[in-house]
Image (tube, rainbow, N blue to C red; front, side, top):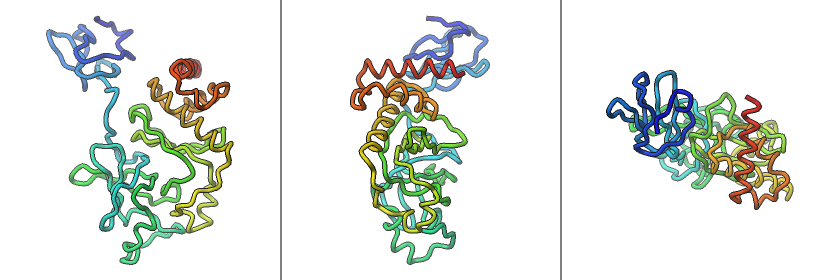
Length: 281
């Protein structure tokens, strides 16, 4: 059906859906024009910026930008570089010259460093990194030249729609419930036990250790609850931010962790989060 300016935004449409017949609007990505009307060419949410109408796909691969904070998984170790799955059209690349050495040392990498690359990152390891540039073929170039970046341990990863994770100034959050969350804008989110940066800096070998800290049953349950809260926000297509995760966590406390993904409970919690976000706005 046709839509006026008041209800163009926040509509979910399917391909071929009429968005508006008002010729005052211009078509953007995800739309096409026919008979002076604008239609959706993809399934997604309608967005309007002034007079420009576009449709944001419900599902799409991550398209990186320089400065993005991402969570990735090492898929291959090769000559002076690691291949990293970052949920994009092709793997990202982390060069040996783009990592920080144990103890925060910054120096030229030697042949000795190249021989022990697997002691830094091995296949299957999860890494917290920043996009620094693009290669000629479009692959993302990553770096971990800061003690806040590096190997991820003591937790679990949840994959969500990348478009639900907005870019912000901070992507590493310590939640009031006591766990750390890394919101990768590529749709990979890491939830883990809190370990202070001072402890990591004090122990040079800790930076690339494969050993997890001792995690209590209470901490495991908290991590699992936060992970399920993020999964239900993703399922109900709610923006995933520090605020929405906190709202979902507080609302979920009356329920058992294993019940959070049941359809009726997930819908109830998502509605509660949306109401709290609207009230806050």
